[in-house]
Image 1: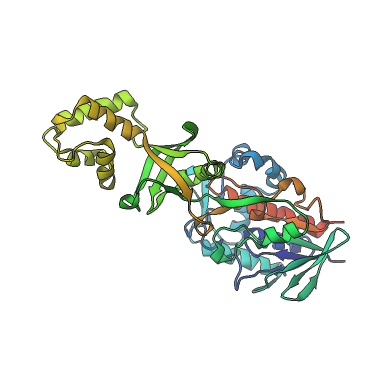
Image 2: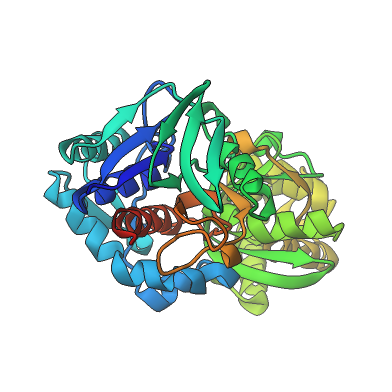
Length: 412
């Protein structure tokens, strides 16, 4: 007899779970609260959709930090190579870019959504839109159905794949946490992750400026916590970009503890102090009759020159050959250690993912089934799993979806 499976949530994890459950022989219904499925997937990666990463398994798992071990089984069953093959089999060519990031060749996230939805429907999955789930029906420690706007839908298993709380306009409003908690699950307190940071120092004059090939250190209570090299940018309220987003999880955790948090930007990581000092001496000698306002444009983007002059207390109209040794030292230090005080973070509406969620200690990593409620499965961002930016989080959504769907369809 066919098992009847309900998937709550029609995002990346939910659609993958639904299609896999149907392929494994189940009768599957997806309940999606929005008017169309996978809205968040359709805008992810700045509209380009970074699907996965070609890093090997050990490196991949390391990007999840303390929770990475939980994903070992899911990744061993369905990993990046499988995901790439899956989408290409659906007629969606993919390309691998810098840092091992995998994107659709069209650079259009909606193409990913169309391929996924087409595949799900081809498996015979029924997708019901504008159908928010109000509660789970539990009898004797087992889930037997769901309630949608007063109507009960009976089933043999439920997969909760409602996403997190980031980008709430796409439907990710944390509904799954409430359903999981009501079923008896512990929910690790949530907060935004992969999120732009706010700073005490004004950055509006530099908003929109992207810095490439810079080093960024995260300092907590004055001690270096982590250091990365790559790209970042300034916003009206602080800093963002790949480096900042990757560091934001630890920064937000530290802020929540009440720690002092700073980011220190090395604008000249290719030069050590001695080489940078020699470069400054040479510039001041060769361009000694230029003002510092003009001379610094050879070292910095124009938007940063006023900030540098103000913070180093160098007179903008001073000539290069008038700069003292003390001023040169201050400038060199600033170029290697442009420090910003982190005071907060942007809201869930601007966060790429949600940190926190259903406690993974209460979920079987071999099946994604709840250890507390028989027939209840979890997939995707609802779980307390978060990784760096680079395609890792979306792969986790697809892998846990694959495992949850396959497991739910075959439960004895």
